[in-house]
Length: 350
Image (cartoon, rainbow, N blue to C red):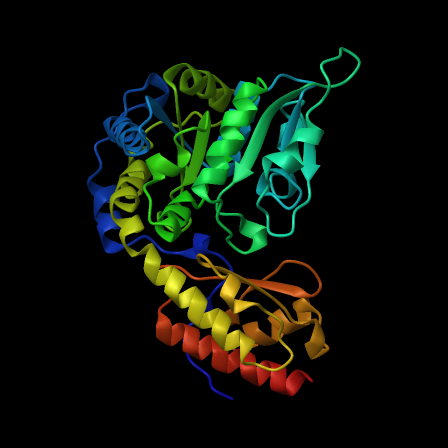
């Protein structure tokens, strides 16, 4: 058995620690009261994010879940519906907040790879009659977390936006990892998101900041989201201390995401070479790797427990599937060590 003192944490790209540059920026941040819109670091972050995305304004929020909910509540009324993908984050991992707090009903579309098409969505749009809840919004996810970090082709995303707008619907993008999508596509985030009415992205995932997300869009929408953020308890005070880290993440984080994607491909190919693990490595596009451990004779929980005993961490998708995510705190040697441990566990578990 190969042992090391280092814990190789592949549970998510949210587990990263702030870089030295982020810690310096946090310590030196100029701050003010953001509820009064007087924190200069937050204001600078919001303006820079809007500039990068080619939008009028931005709003710093504590989490991606709050950002998604604020955008949904700002663009869909109580009793209306939001079309989203069946495995999507807004439907499965945000505590049913759109229904519980927003009074909005999700209308889900199952897909094989998390990527919806207009042909799949169109039949889900409600007939214009007062006896049925009305469709108000379409929510896409790019990259799609539980489909293994899959990416919407830009042309498809633009087509969905155009046809949704023609149907009188708004379109929101849960772009928690949209910079990963942009790197994969070789395009700017402004280009791939330009037709969406609202975009939420996270600083605390691939970009490596300790906390925080951003909403960008037209100024009236952002001001409506500011009201909703306060309603949801997201009014923050001298929050420039974390906005400073987000600024570093925004400027520096996208430059190295291709490394995470390369490491994910190395991981996926290595997993494919281990007997009884089921994965299609050619499908890996970004930094998320999902594979099936059912043929090992172990449930995912048992498999992960055995890995954790050897200081390799992953996450369960369900009883058979495991998710691992590459990030700034994992390098190629960590991937090699993780693959050695996984091979040992599979060999002993069968």
